[in-house]
Image (cartoon, rainbow, N blue to C red; front, side, top):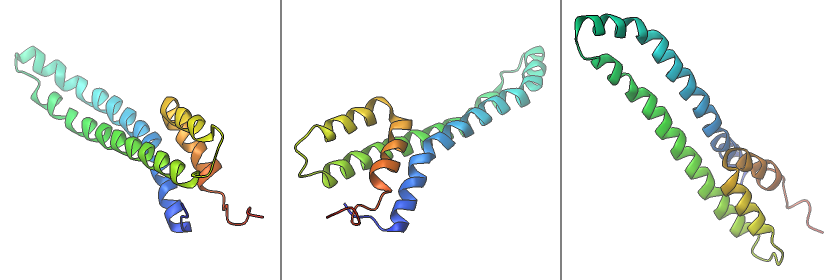
Length: 126
């Protein structure tokens, strides 16, 4: 599977999106709790249910959902790229990469990107 330089850049961004998403998730999660603790104490003393508290979870779940979709899309793309680019392989390279991609999804995808997608294999053909 031959990719242009622009396509490789977009795939690289897609590979790093889950890590960035997890970082944003933690920032939003802890920032939300730190900013909402004083309001929770006031609402608890008044006997009101904490509606703002539960409404704030929407942004956290949106970030988490987008992160999960980016990770799943990256995994599917990597497996399709692996199968299409290694059609004539007789060894267990495909099986090895599929196991790495499945069991070490975040870091395995980044390693696959730098070792298999990013190098220009047209220059390596003898």
